[in-house]
Length: 137
Image 1 (cartoon, rainbow, N blue to C red):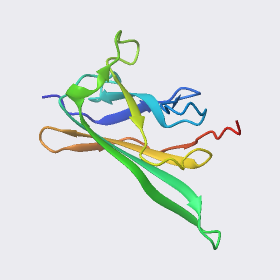
Image 2 (tube, rainbow, N blue to C red):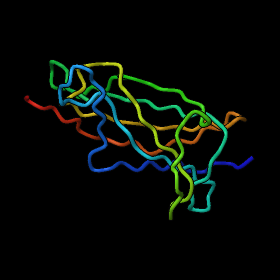
Image 3 (cartoon, one colour):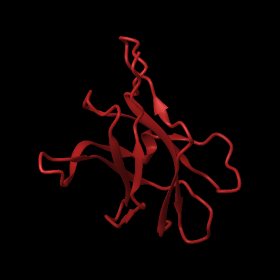
Image 4 (cartoon, helix red, strand yellow):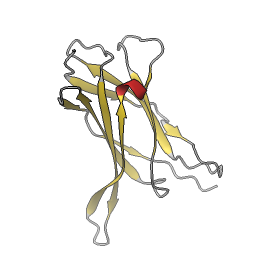
């Protein structure tokens, strides 16, 4: 078994998924690539579970910053799509996630990805902060 040392997530400039059957333009999810690095600088495929947390960053009535868990996902790596043609970064996964709430458009979010191997060893990505677009039409 390969020991994962680092979880790297790569986000496109527009990582948003429009999954709404109503057809509005506001995103209902996000997609990004994840690479599991055993310390070689190249991603590898590994058996384990991805744990992803999405937090909404907002301000309360007093203007203080709040951070609320809005969605979390738990998927075995065997159920996640793999990148078809590994490139310079090695093998990787493509996560496509739909959030539970409908009130995320226009808000700032934070994403944290963790990978837990079969022995229970957990490696965490850095926190990624993004602003979800909100469209007026």
